[in-house]
Image 1 (cartoon, rainbow, N blue to C red):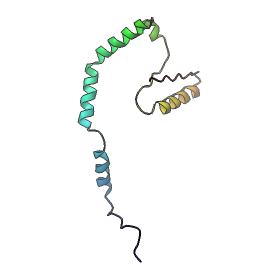
Image 2 (cartoon, rainbow, N blue to C red):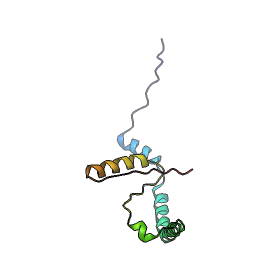
Image 3 (spheres, helix red, strand yellow):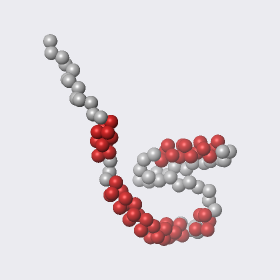
Image 4 (cartoon, helix red, strand yellow):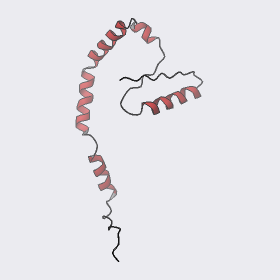
Length: 103
């Protein structure tokens, strides 16, 4: 009777497995270039953000009085907010998370 279980592939070494996993990640050089470009555009981004604050009828001075933590990105916002809120509450601070969703 033939076995239905295929023969397992030879085991990779730890180093080979890490090399294979790292090959699945984005190119580190590309990420570094993106980060460098983002820092070059920082003044433009800040200027644009100030303009939007003013268009909303607020001022940067008023904005600087707020005690807020802004969490943005594509993944992990809920976890980051939950951890941050827990840390702040354990430190005796009052928190009030506001989760905005853009469409």
